[in-house]
Length: 219
Image 1 (cartoon, rainbow, N blue to C red):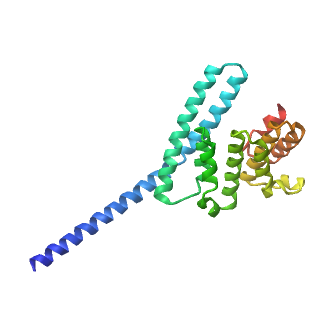
Image 2 (cartoon, helix red, strand yellow):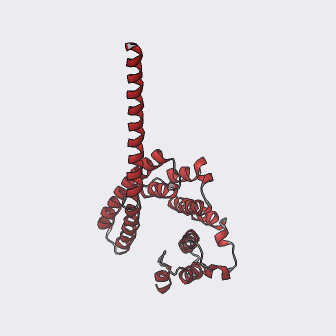
Image 3 (cartoon, helix red, strand yellow):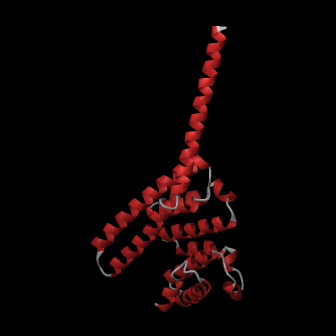
């Protein structure tokens, strides 16, 4: 009888231990979810600002300052990527793949970004998230000096294949961002008039200021 009691106590202890471990994992996941907007997403906002500042410094012929800004941007990317990986591992949620791929770009690893875009998990994502992945993939192609390939990727999206009038009909954020990326890539390959037309169309539709298309039109 004492042996049976000891076994029952052992089972109870193991059960309690497993329950505590499971609860600890749930608590960790909740902390990550709570901190997600204050962590990696804010770092990526800062990353975009840093890269824009670096571009301005390069234009002002201040490469030393630009290098310092880019170093800070790489730090932001690395920290955001680490947190996103942890969240993905604990939750199984794949919806942040575009952010992770963009972090890889920020770390100077466009090939790794393209691998994430082509991963099996990417094909299971909702259309808007897949569109964000397409934007990142196009940016990675441009990082590799493949602007024409970037244009081709963007042109496959339905957001660019609708009549011009539909651009005014409250497009989704992802559609606005894709059209903006298309205009930017057109500008990069020297198709300035087409780029200007797309920037104007995005600016008219972007009532919430998701992009800086209005500033590009004014500039």
